[in-house]
Image (cartoon, rainbow, N blue to C red; front, side):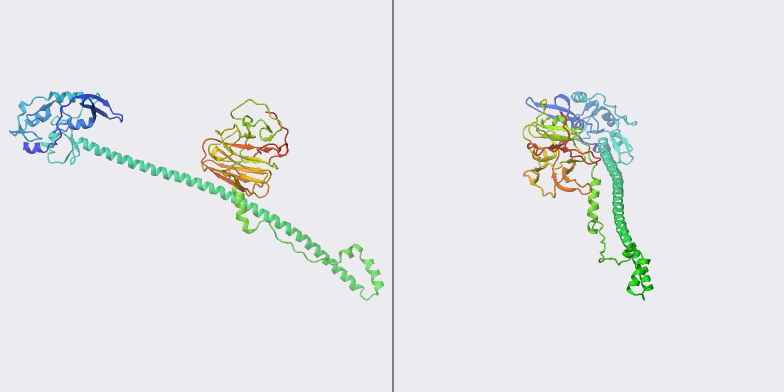
Length: 515
């Protein structure tokens, strides 16, 4: 029986004799021991691996008071005592099955010292079996309880399936990881559902606003149609009333003619004039000329309704126009600012300013006082009848000294007009723009996250016409920039204006204010 019990014990590696130089903390937080095999090299072994090698084959715990049998294998003193108390006459080593005498087993002092050197402060005292006073090192899968090694070998659990506590712990830890993973998936799913609900609400709200805007445009179109129709109908009603009056007077004249039908010509004329005034005779004459029908022209073709409404809606869904002001600290010395720093024009004489890194010293440029590093923004610039101008955005880190490098590669996105004839976008290479007419107001739309900078002909607020769109990966803060170009001895001295969002800008050249 002792042989069967010993065969059920778990075999592990015996403790190897080695010299241990130090115990250190591994960078990942795990304890490691450095073993020196030779003066010129060393290798590391983790403490869990050492503990696995320093386990008693019976209780599967780190040796406690290790005793060495004649065969060379070591066991806990308590485990050997428990085996010796068994009525079986012979005692065999559970690992090698060699017959041994437990009474002549000396303590394994070297192994005990190694284990003592590996003991860390704060290790909790292991729980022990209430029957055998051995550590609870095994887990009975059938009874779902912790047992000691002797309970599995000799006690009531000897025929049960048992598993080392460390294995069960790892299994349960893995199960815990699975549970945590499942919990994270559930939380992720809940978050997705919640975010979807919020976004659904946003979509419904946005479409409600769109429906409201569409209803406003519908009412506007119907009101315009009804007004146009009322005007036409009123004109026709007036003409109809005049025609009906003429008809009545003609009938009256006919009755008069019938009364004097048998009279001579002279008598007829005398009596007719005595009864009817000259004005009545004039009004009784038939309408002269041919009938000219009035056409129904509402000013909106039915095929253009959707496009027209879309253009109006597009302007309404753009961000509200920004209220921008110019930054005097960035203005070229020739530039003169006025109207609360919303109007700029190129003067004839340079103004004296302290040298500042943010000021343009060659190109006649000025920046807005506000920059944008995220979001959607729209603003307008009135260029009027200037023959030369440029506008757009510039990176806050772009150089302002020397001639401005007008290209996206240098952090500058511009469009402009040259010599009053050529519109162009300053890309690489420059792109001529087929602009219809001569826009006096330019709209600028920046969508920072989408990397879009779009320019519009904004002369008609309800009909923004696309001029050009830059596509870029914006980085850092962008500032609106105005370039008045040189005054050309006064021929290009008209100002550029940042209009107030509430109304159009005035193009009357203002009196400059010294900076």
